[in-house]
Length: 114
Image 1 (cartoon, rainbow, N blue to C red):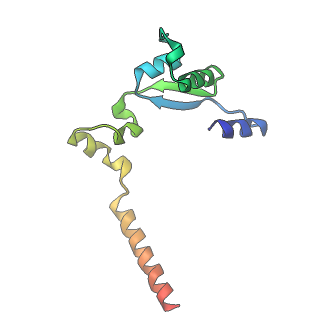
Image 2 (cartoon, rainbow, N blue to C red):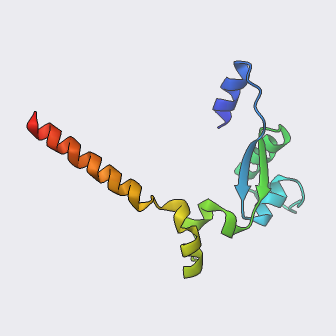
Image 3 (cartoon, rainbow, N blue to C red):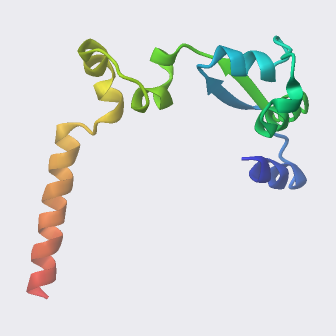
């Protein structure tokens, strides 16, 4: 996203900070300066890069609980109730799938006739 931001700004389109969501409170604290680690020398360079982008107001990094973080859904084990609640966010509705199947069948029949 950094390269796209630079291109757009050079074209005269000022960009607001790009929001980045995390569920890791330690990473959020280090990047936003709320937590000062004792040994930053051993800290991964990616944290320094993100911290610089936050200071330049290119990114706005914020914390959000894992249950509300869509990327977190695929990396954690959740209860069945959570899967039922989130399912509609990730699955394509049945009617849309049926319409796509019908369209595909129609295209196949048209291709065979030609």
